[in-house]
Structures are given as C-alpha cells and as structure tokens.
Image (cartoon, rainbow, N blue to C red; front, side):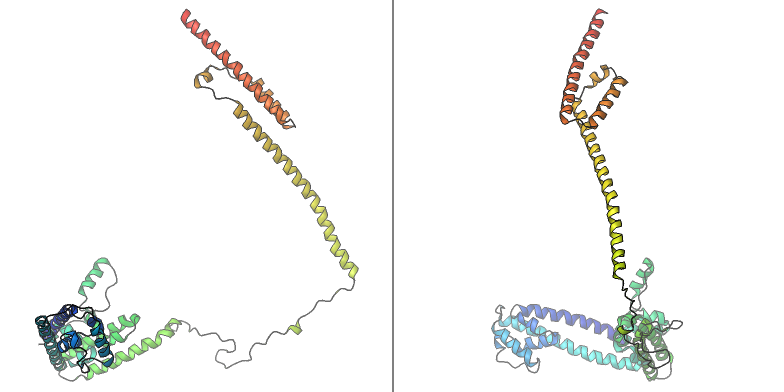
Length: 409
C-alpha cells in the first residue's frame, strides 16, 4: 500500500505541475501580468476561476485567496493590462481546467494524509527518523520493508544514487555520500561540510529502525525518537567542534590559543611590559678638543683628492684607446668599399697577391693610425681604383692570348 501510494503521489505532483503551467500559458494571452503577481499555482487557479475576464477584477473581492498587497497590485494591473480580449467560450474552458487542478490538489492532500497514517502504522521508527515521504520512498526503492531490513546501513545511505555510484566506480572517482536520505530533515539542517557525516550516521540508525519495524514486536516509535535525539546532539557537537578542530585541538595535537603577552600558563595576569624610557639612554661623552676633530675631518678629504687624480688619468687613457679603435673600424670599412666586386671567371684568372704587398699595406695602415688625415685616405682610395682598372685590361689581354693559342692549335 505504501509503495503504491507514494508512486501515485509523485504522479499527481507531475500532473498538477503540468496543468498549472498550461493554465498560466492559456490565461496569459488575456492577462499576462497575473503570472508575475501570483506565484503559487493553486492560488493562480483559484484567482482565474473567480475573476474570469480581467475587467471584473475591480468589482471582486480576493481577500480569501490573496493578501491585501497582492490584491491591490492585481487590480491596478488589470486596468492597464496588455493582454488580448477573450471570448466567453474560451474563459469557460480555462475555468474547467482550473477546476481540474483544484480537484487534483485536494485529492493529493487526502492521499498524503493516508500515506502518513500508513507509515506511522507500518514503520513508526523509520518515520520518526527520516519523515513519511523519505521513509516511503526508501521502502518503495527497496521493494518492501522486509527487503529493506536486509540491507546494511551503507546501502541505505546511497539508496537512490546507484547511477552515480557505478559511474564513480567505473571512472575511479569518489563515491556519492547520500541518495534518497539527502531529503531527510536532519541532513538538510547540517552545514554542507557535515552533510556526509550526518547522512552516514542517519543511515546507520535508519537501518536499525527498519529492522526494528520489520521484525520487532513493539509498535511504538520510542527507538526512533531516541536515535533522532542522539543524531541532533551529534550535529550540534559537529558544529561546536568546528572552531576547535581548526585550531588543532584534536587528539595528539597541541592546543593553539590566542597569544596574550600579559598572561602566563596556568597563572593569572602578570605585570604588563614597561613602556620605553628615553631618559635611561646612555649618552657618549663629547670631546672638548675641537682642533683634533678638525684635523680628523680634513685628513680624509685630502686622501680623497689624491685618489681622484689617478682615476682621471685612467679615464683619459681609456678614451684615447677607444678613439683609435673607432678609426681602425672606419678604415676597414673604407677598404671594403674600395675593393669592387669581381665576377667568378675573373677571380679564377687573377694571380694571387704576393705576401710582400700585403706587408706593405699593413705598414701603410699602421702609419695612417699614427696620425694621417682624411685626405690621405681619399688619395689611397683613388690609387686603389686606378690599380684595379689597370688590372682589368691585363686580364683581358691574357684571355686574348689564350684564344690565339687555341686557334693556332
């Protein structure tokens, strides 16, 4: 009986929700603002049945259905509503649907009362622990009270979360901490981090209560009430221990307390720390011989002047060396620009430059480094260009000679 009753109760809830949403959509064409003003589905259906056309809202009294504030808001919205006009036939069909919703809600209330009485008769201890609805769903999920009594507390804890359990085992993730038992009032009261502990304790006590209901002789709920009181005490203890645990007051750990400089271990207040006394500072004796101080001051100044002179000489030498390096770089660039690019065939035909010429060039470069002007560099470039121009006709004459030899052969 309990399994069938809880199944029908769930079906009624679904049907009621579907019908109520249909009324909101249907009547929303005529009075769309009412959906926002009245949130409850049953009150909405009663209001629509009583009002009919929105033009009648100003004449009617909704005090039995709605509070005064909502009633005044509804009447103001009915005057300036954006909805379309509706025929009497359409309104009649909407009112009939409202009657269906109201009759279903009345039947649901009767069914809930029936389920409560059956649960208190069949499983009083389980009802005292988790409530009528959660207890009925557990029995329905287990198949019967006797089948549920054969299950351990760990199975009762995750009953209803089988899909999540097997997915967690397959993917090697953490298993769920609660199933249907999550909707019990004790688990709902707990903080999010204590829900797992409370659901485990509640499942263990619920397993005992189920066995007592299924196999025990007593038909009262004394055991369930005792266990509920214990669980509520455990919940209070968990919430109270939260601060102590964070401070490290668990077994085997030192208790950390707030530091107080004016308090000793196991003793009361001690004398507070004395404030700083500037009069107790020791002052060095001042030297009366002012001439000695002057001599000490002037001595290091002279040393500093002496040290500055060699530093200036070194800086001048470094600057001269850098100037020479820059001049050398400029000359090398000028030499590279002076040497014109020669084709691959001409490079093969040219004779290698003798070493003596290379030595002479080096000597000339060194002489230029020692202090020649820029004009000398320009003249040297002209000479090199003339030398290259003279070499080119020599290469051509060599080619002509080779051709003559070939023709003679």
